[in-house]
Amino acid sequence: MMLSAFANPVFDSQRNFRELLQAMARPAAPRELPVLPPSPAPIAPAAMAILLTLCDATTSVWLQQPQPTAVDHLRFHAGLKLAERPEDADFALITDPTSMPPLDAFARGDLRYPDRSASVIVQVAGFGASHGAGKFSGPGIRDVETLAIEGLPHGFWQQRAELASQLPLGVDLYFVAAHQVVGLPRTTRWLEG
Amino acid sequence: MTYNFAFLDEDTKRMLRRALLKAVAIPGYQVPFGSREMPLPYGWGTGGIQVTAALLGPDDVLKVIDQGADDTTNAVNIRRFFARVAGVATTEHTVDATIIQTRHRIPETSLREDQVLVFQVPEPEPLRTLEPREAETRTLHALADYGLMHVKLYEDIAQYGHIATSYDYPVLVDGRYLTSPSPIPKFDNPKLHQSPALMLFGAGREKRLYAIPPYTEVESLAFDDHPFEIQRWEHQCELCGSGESYLDEVIVDDRGTRMFVCSDTDFCGQRRPEARA
Image (cartoon, rainbow over all chains, first blue to last red; front, side, top):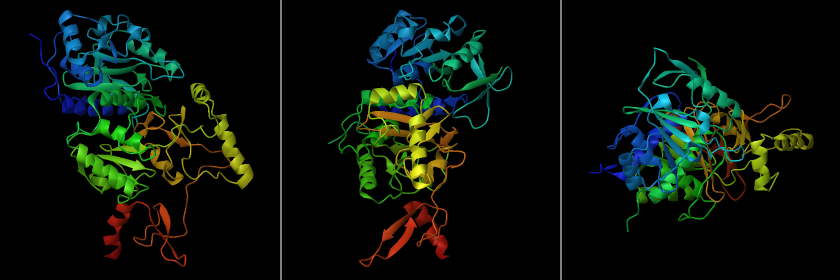
């Protein structure tokens, strides 16, 4: 039987959006998503919350692992289009970061329209502040933010740093783990690992 | 008659929310969006209203100001509009608000991290009076070619001896995009720099929205030998005595008697009991 979506679509998506907005405005600082809907594997409830909050028939979504139950669920509840290739996606969902495509596989926009770029949701193992933490700075960060994002593939940060030379083109990231979301817009600089 | 919560339908809100997230991710860049017809005319805050509608939830407390005042037609109507279509609480006190929609001022009271400021923007393109073609200004932004604006400011200096632009004073956001701060007085420009609160801008007729994230570098354009300066007055507010707020000059009788008063009515009102005590 198909799982349900938000119990109260109007207010649940509004509350999630406000946290997503603050997550994007204050990068590398974990925020709690207030309403998590049921979600079929391999999509985590927090990732499903973002997709149901932001996606509809006008957005195309690329799933790294398009399991039939997950695809049916998204099509039924959000009516969204699935993209066949990462570069065609407005939103992309990474359910297994260790085998994710390189970041430059996604749309980075063009210089006249840098907003025509992908938002990539990455399901990670968790967030920490001490062991193996990276330092971040940029718009939205007062001084320096320290955060460890667990479960990313080797070389991820180098890939992202190489994309930074193309600013204002780029890819905006949402990392999710359990109830938490961390925003990482293209402008956030990774200082050290 | 009942409306969908906050007037707009859910598809429109999602479209606005996606655009707002991209706007925050690319500070100062104008994101095109599908602006809807609103139940008030262009020029009365249709862009700001759509941004506010995409943000609002039942727990929000909304404040609306027009040139600093809570009690002017535009502010009263927008506040009543959202009280009716969203049932949200409204306030005139800056400190009590979670969302503040503003036309042409930033409140004197410092904003907090948990507040969002929404600007009504008539013309989002700072280069528009210098270059009317959208295709051309878009290219100038793509190339970060802002020489036109520097020439304009230089011509001010050549003609008047100082930069004569006193409102809608152009800023460079995060060292990249030339951005209109909306027609706020340049007095308010320093509040854009490293603001604790997120600032969102909506232009309904021009179908653009943009953002200045919190704690972001915002530089008012200037020259080394003509640094940026804000307005100063020889007067103090005649109601509350403030010497550091933005003052309006008001004519109070038929003989042209003038008085200077704070443009921010909440700030002024909060100070007056103290001033009397």
